[in-house]
Length: 388
Ligand code: SF4
Image (cartoon, rainbow, N blue to C red; front, top):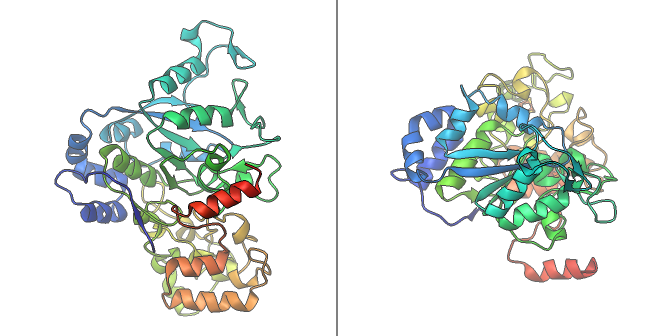
């Protein structure tokens, strides 16, 4: 893996390695309980505002966040020194807006609060959901208060120090951009595996983005990443700008509770049995996240433990490259447009033998336009090909 380090100090009394190791192996609640004094010291004066913008998606990442298992989500946010100042879904939308113009006094208009927050510029921007670019680049397939979310995002991103793209729709387009995507939905920095098709590229903007994917994202991934961002700690991200501590250490398959069944050849073709779910279409071999260790709903369970196959929801090419969800990996006839029936078997063998994580992923699920950030020539060439 070729990680990229973002600048910034580590937490007081807690080295970067220790921070990442702890963050990777403990839940947010446990981590914050153990280290909230250190975190608090690092961000004592922060009280950083969060501007939480929602685009095209189901709202599941907000629901997942609220079901985080922490005794109190607000207390968790407090522990990391953050305040949700604007949230498209949680705050009451007040006031009457007609074609983007407030028709009621400002004090009763939620969108006016959004304007004031953007004017202040002192916030971390959290984006949930993809951002439609259509029709014809106007972004008007998705509006809030009569304004295209693309336009609101553009203004909010301009002033944001950091953008956290929360959930696979915001990170990579996800289900919102699946198939032919009539809305031309984009991720913030990436669409699929291409960093040239994110909405930021469309807007000709460059910003610091951390992708926290998942359909939905795990609340720990978000809270711990936010703690990192607010404390100014170094964050090592992987090739898709995901915190490496959560998404690059091992495949789901490596830590799955059903791995013993796999090794013994006990493979089910139905859900919720006792054996490995490989025959039911599990994509755990080509999906990299710590779900089996971290677990969901307060550490109770995870997809494979509950008897459902992993569908690869944290990966950049989700859902297209992982469909049909319930077919075995090598039974998919087309992967990224290429018939790899035999190749997939070789790749799976390589995965099991521990070949390079990203090499295997690129071979298995396809990869395009994922050049390094410094590759300006290719970026400008692509832009000129697209007429900009
Ligand atoms: S259920 Fe999936 S992740 Fe678990 S051992 Fe089987 S193939 Fe691997």
